[in-house]
Structures are given as C-alpha cells and as structure tokens.
Length: 180
Image 1 (tube, rainbow, N blue to C red):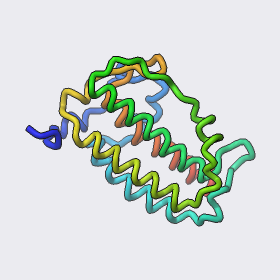
Image 2: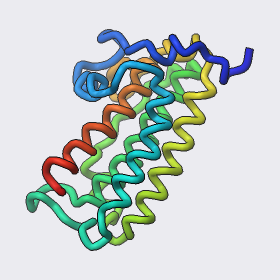
Image 3: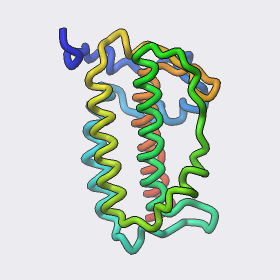
Image 4: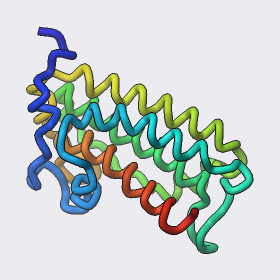
C-alpha cells in the first residue's frame, strides 16, 4: 500500500473533541464534512481566486486602526499553516518532543507584510498550501490519529489538518465581512 492510498474514511473523519484543545473547535466546526485533503486542495484554488480579486492598493486596508491589514491577514495564513503543518509532521512521525507555542501578533508585527505586494503574498500562500496538501496526502491511516503536544496542549494530526482548513475559512470570513 502506498501513502496516497490512504482510505478516504481516515481523511474524512472529523476530529473528536478529545483530539484538540477547545480553542481549535471554532476552526474545525467551519470545515465541511468530507475528505479534508480534498478540501485543502480545493481551497488553494478558491482562496487564491478570491485574494487575487483584491487590488494591491487595498492590501494595506485595516477595518480598524488596531487590526491587521489585508496583507497581514494573508501573511498570517501562511505563517500559521506552516507552523500547524510542521506540528503535524512531527506528530505523524511519532516525535514526542513538546513543541513551543508562538505569538501570531509578534509574527505579523515583525514580518513587514505591508511592504510586500499582494501577488507575492498570494504566491507564497499557494506554495505553502501545495506543501501542506503533499504532506497530508502522503500520510498513512495510522499517522492521522497520532497525537503530540504543542504549547502545552495535546493535538492529533487529523485535528491539525482540519484546523488548517478551518483557520483559513475563519479569516476569509473576516475579510469578507469586515474588510471588503
């Protein structure tokens, strides 16, 4: 059996509440039922199309003075997806190292995202998503249920995949509701 022959029921099983900290439930609940790898793959196209529709001149827009700009939201999506995918890789490989948390606000503050064009940020997000899909697409069924610890919280590989998809949906909803 090859890794890409992962049964779809493994990838379609929504994580149980004991597979993640309650905070992540708000993201996981946004993801439609079905194969989460397919969802991630499809989102790559739909999210890119949506973001490409935002003019570069609007990329620095904030809906309030203390909120992130559109560019910063896009950069945040890439940063978080990389971190969540890295955690999934470590946990899938049965690495028992306790992984640290991160401060997403400090990441955004130091990334100088408003100095980059939207096209650059979108291309980066597409590349990150391609790597994420390849990672999850290559997992064997038993790897999806493996659990690790990040920031003092236990989380399964499956929950990380669903969190990545839901985190994106969360921020796209905010962009639609408050920015555009």
